Length: 493
Image (cartoon, rainbow, N blue to C red):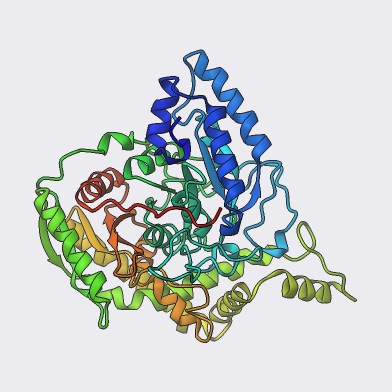
């Protein structure tokens, strides 16, 4: 039998329906693959028994000709999603041992459609990071290597466990979250496909909050089709989330293969940064050529407030984080350190429970919200956010259907190479992605080539609100034109 972990999600779905193999066989193959790949540290919690029980239930449904859209398909779940009866930590010591008594809406939707849970995937602590080096449970290692080097490469962040697991064939697809690029940047770093949907397209209920006005759930998968299949199940209105949009969920898979002829693609001049890697610039030009060859019209556009997006984001996001993380105090759940009084208990619990990067962002957020600084920083950042959104609105009003940009300013880097002396060096990885979150737009990253040292590079498509279908059709056009990115033979076990 072919290695079942090498199938795409769509191929596995079709194989199950054709009775070429069972869900138990498919799930066992992935359970075994996860067991062999512990050196990647992609999973915080593995749930093999639960997975096989779910697979048996799926096989029973499939035998009757029943089953949902994801029936019997094994997935990995980012450990930011609450899962009933299974530890959920947000990769933080402060939540170690926390077992929710409820299920997030997105994972409930996946189980409703028959998906199988292999376990909980590693991430940057509370989703704060761009390399998956801030996890309390240790960094995730990318399955990729530079040519002629054994240096451990980062899988991107914060959804590094999700991107590494999908790239290394440790699940057919994975849930992820994106606050400033945490789906798209890891996808670009690992040669996978990631989509951050429009804000409100997926419920945030039951997902541990980082920055509530920016966070959005989405999938990481190996192909554009797989991402479309997953998003259809993940998306939908939820009365428990007041920011969730009450609108029908399209069958996104129908957009795969749709003609892109006549689509107008905007190329923002502000994204051509000084000092941009020649490889990234060349890849962007190649993406333009591919879409033009597919029949799209290319138009240069201006997004003048782009240069302010990164500093504004790193005011808004920490401000919301400082508020959201105030609930972790050692009283109701999670870690508790004893103190001589209630204030001492708070201080000791939070000092030990939160990692360095989380503490940094809480302090930044508290500072910009404090009396005397609120107007100077937070209020001004919100005004800039409005201007960034207006830039996109004007571009779309002019007839642009989607915008093509690079996904990252460089290929993936090695562990410890960035941010150790200056955290801003790490924050610059989000320069092409944060605008999408600030404006609440959908963004799709598709693998488009390899760097000179053999690491994946991705292109980003930014769409109109709730027009993910356009992104899927354009993304598939790039996927068909781009050279196929194939992970070398496994080195990890």
